[in-house]
Image 1: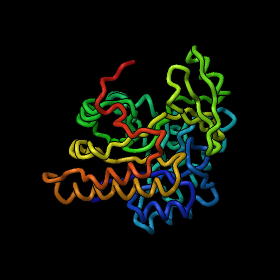
Image 2 (image 1 turned 180 degrees about the horizontal axis):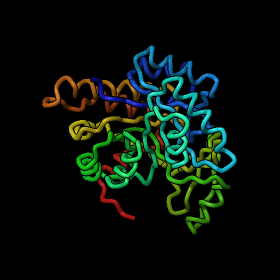
Image 3 (image 1 turned 180 degrees about the vertical axis):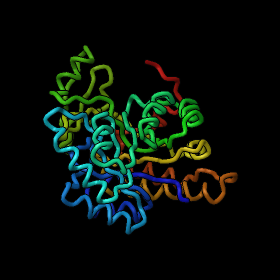
Image 4 (image 1 turned 135 degrees about the horizontal axis):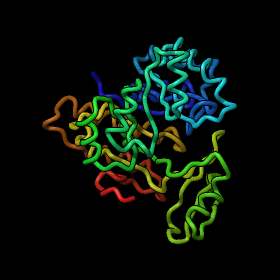
Length: 307
């Protein structure tokens, strides 16, 4: 069975291109129910999208990971029923309201728990596993030792992000001012040549944190990109179940290159785990696509966690 390479897609056409490039699972949805998606695949077309992914031999997971307000809850049961009827392979959730509504409206749906920064230990993972979740999406802040320890102590599948930017701050309110207040020090907002907005802290003027806004509020993203191609074999040997490439705020050519490269690496490992070596041409392919003002890094993989 091929290791899962999961990417977020914003349209049916993009799904097709990403699957052809090597993804065998896609994360889709719309801003009414999911956060930080590269585009909306609305409720009336979600069944078509899921069926399309299945015809191409890929799984289709639907993001229902937003934090719901009371006035948004009435729409949730009907949406979950739609996903169940469309045979979605799983729904990705963080709010317990989704779990409760799945039990009532669509108990056949598979659940992936994704609490982003709070998915840091096996006890929390087991807690949601006892309530029906089959997968934990791990926090990006875990180091390799913590990932391996959690995998060894949990019966759930685990998902690790291996490439792309990460979300570091989110609010449903006016985040720009809130974030600067949170920092308690000088910061400014810059408009980039690509019409994007960036937060620049006075102490780190060379680091630009992309500011992304959707229907669920404002999100500050990381100043660099995770790239775990070199240590990928360590995660494969540890039994990580799903490898996620974050496609948000990236050109499609960039994402296609990342998908093709990671799939080549995974296939090389699957063919010969003992003799596997990361190839220089793979690293060069990623670096050639990387913007000069954003570094590729191992993230927290080799760092001791500090709170």
